[in-house]
Amino acid sequence: MKTVPFAPLDPALYRETVRRALAEDLGWGDLTTDSVIGEKQRARGVLIAKSRLVVAGLDIAAEAFMQLDPGAKVARTLQDSDTAEPGGVIADVSGYAGPLLTAERTALNFLQQLSGMATLTRRFVDAAAGRVTVLDTRKTPPTLRALAKYAVRCGGGTNHRSGLDDGLMIKDNHIRLSNGIREAVLALREAGHDMPIEVEAQSLAQVDEALAAGVDLLMIDNMTLDDMREAIRRARGRAKVEISGGVTLERIDELAGLGAEYVSVGALTHSAPAADISFEIERA
Image (cartoon, rainbow, N blue to C red; front, side, top):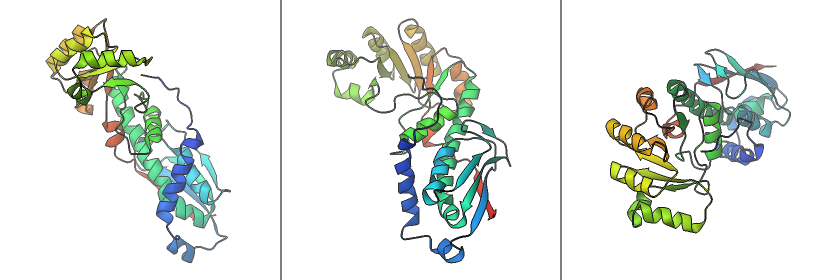
């Protein structure tokens, strides 16, 4: 795993994504706003948390407003990774009223979805209480992986591999299509990739085969608690262990106490409920 220092996202990772999202919503034009709101009318709005949440995606939301009104101003009360309490102001936005209204839904879609991921991640991290590192997975919205993994970092989680070129992982289907774990590991070594090798194991027999092949990381997937304990015992001093499959908030306390180094949670990015955030606007 790579620990990525928390830092703002490079705008190059989201600028075009925001442009496409605005175009998707806008179509041939914002018929209502263009008819009702004067071209020179100015407005001020506030982004308000409606429930307790971890903020993620403020720069992306700001980009949505500023792509339609380059002169728009976004004054942040909170920063990404901060916790917002119900009723708390996240940011003030000011500019021309028409563009603010047109960009509102796109800005909120990004901010709500990413803040939802960050909020769920923070709940897992808090429940793990430092006993195990909480990882994300590649189960992310297509084309939005960099943003989803950023949201996980905002919540205090750790990114697993960002793509297929960012790590060596022999999964169950690789094993089924090859001549077993040993042969797959040998093939990776012969390919000359200078990366740790991870193997997914679904039984203690596969755990033994992977350990005998000298893997660096063992993913134990959907095992019983007793088998997980035994797998972790066998791997101690030989390979690090990642628990995967069926990891829920209700189970994280128990799983964190088993002695594995990592636990991976697909739900952080594929099932996090959107955070409840509103944009309330008035004449300036």
